[in-house]
Length: 181
Image (cartoon, rainbow, N blue to C red; front, side, top):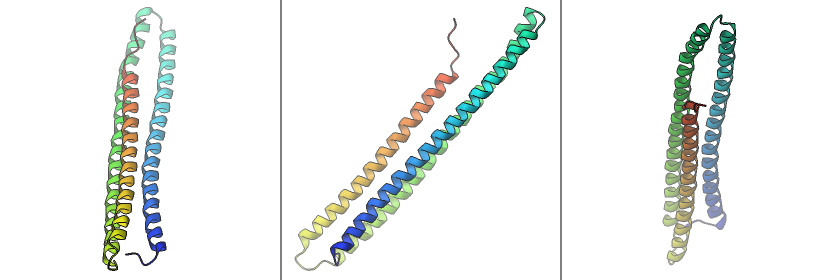
């Protein structure tokens, strides 16, 4: 078992810091993806406004209604391809987020399991006779700490899934044609 309470406190502190580090890493990645989505939306809005203004100028300079309609129709195809490009970029941001999140979470979970196994081994290898109850208490505390870590990871995964769903919903709404007047 631990030779003194400071060893147990240090091991517990290390595990807790590891949990916070994992949560911080995953949260930062989600925020970075949100920043990418916002930047994509701003660029798309800016491009759409510039294209609309250009189409309006062309329609205004057209000599006849037929020429104005042709000018409007010529701007429709680039708008549709822009929407497809937006959806592709958004999908790539979400796919990257999901892949990086799962990779980071899996790596952190693997490291946490390894650390906990070493901690449990240390606890059980240095047990003085008659300390079975103390060992069980320590094992329970370690197990509870790991369960807490798993809950933080699961909550962060759920937050990322919710973020992805909201972004996908916004993308679907952005890809829909505006209602007819």
